[in-house]
Length: 166
Image (cartoon, rainbow, N blue to C red; front, side):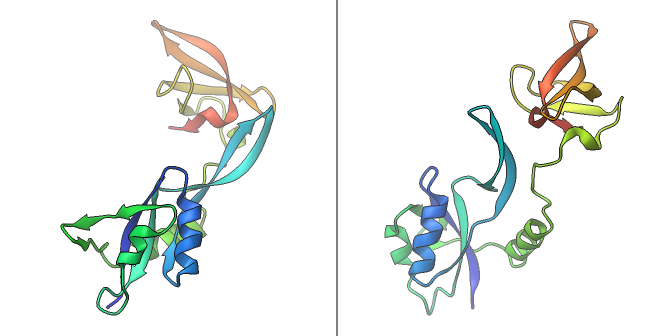
């Protein structure tokens, strides 16, 4: 009976592991999410693994040899209970695939969906995890937010990708 198992990949080698597993004939799946990335004063949309360093492989342990997976390029190992790979409960990978198809995991929502006064959370930077109120868009890449600091609200300009609805 075929079940899904978790493959642990080397750091930043999820795609390499996926490529080599599929070349060997395994049914492998790497869930991804779209995210904004800033680099060299540019913003671009990139695909990133949903679970860094992890991907899934479908196997029938009684018909398909699974030990070659351990020596696959990019693979660090399999999540196991003792000597046997640990199966994932049925339906989990299918649900992840469906949610990925619906773009549920994507972090691409710009602040244009926010209205003045909406609660937001700062996701990264020096103000990470602070809650605030959305004020307005400064331009396509920046927003103004009122952050509660030291007992008063401070108007702060932040990058669009560092703010998420609370």
